[in-house]
Length: 423
Image (cartoon, rainbow, N blue to C red):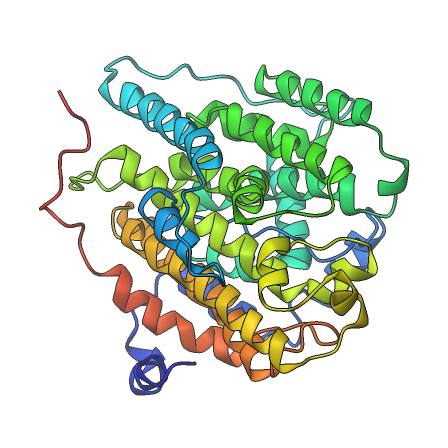
């Protein structure tokens, strides 16, 4: 942890933090001997198989525009060539999502209210559906789950539902049955997505998400784009340059930022443009995915995948053979320092948007951002050995992030930028 952050963490007394119900839930969660009580873990294990750790982080607020143009300059040869094709494609999505949200904010009409969804073939209530989603998040997305405990109950449940759908989508490509997956299976998954957006869920997890998209004005396109990211994983295991990798990061993680902006909400007194908020949402999703890629180099290599820019590897004097050999050398350390610097620049860009969120969302989003960013610190602490060691942040360090996140969350939105909705 950087010295300044460590100082803040050690000088703030947790007893002085306002004890909201969310904080109490989080505090009790930390003091349990494990992240889930034993009986809940056993009950859940009977309902689903444990797959690999989720490769996405979901409490996202992220960005691209100003960061991506400067980030390209981090290529080892020092040439700053704009990744125009990926930037243009992703920026179109930013503009589309921002326009949709602005249109909804302008509308005076009351949103359509759908009746509670009855789960197929059962008399179970939606509460059970959301509880099941919460169990999955607590088991497989611990950092994200911690952040949701600080949210309002409605926000928390929506986040769980979105996260579980993302995990299930990811598992189609990276789960135990991934070798049997065909593009047609993803087509069927996309059709099922359309059904649940129409209020026709297939199972208990779909029911939670169907209820969520009925309550929040969440657009279907980011969900479809995430499925497209899974299609990329089926046909592609190498990325020639950061332009290609950036587009992949948008599909599999930047989309997550778009999904949750509506749930987190923008502060009523914010004067930031919706475009800037969605850019920030994209940046955090990208930063989180780059962090995952750097943390999981060894794990991905054992599955025959390398999510690192091939041209930058070559410029550092490295090749695929070096990745598969898994040896930490001076060349590897030099390469990793540049990759970590790039990820941190995306986090820096993302931080500018968190302040513009609703007050109820700022603390959990800040907490999640700071906790996940610390994975980069752990990679450095492991002497850049991400071949045989998987960087993880201790519970103590995550807890120390909470007062820092709280302090940052108390900063009100800036009033110097252009209005949120332009007339």
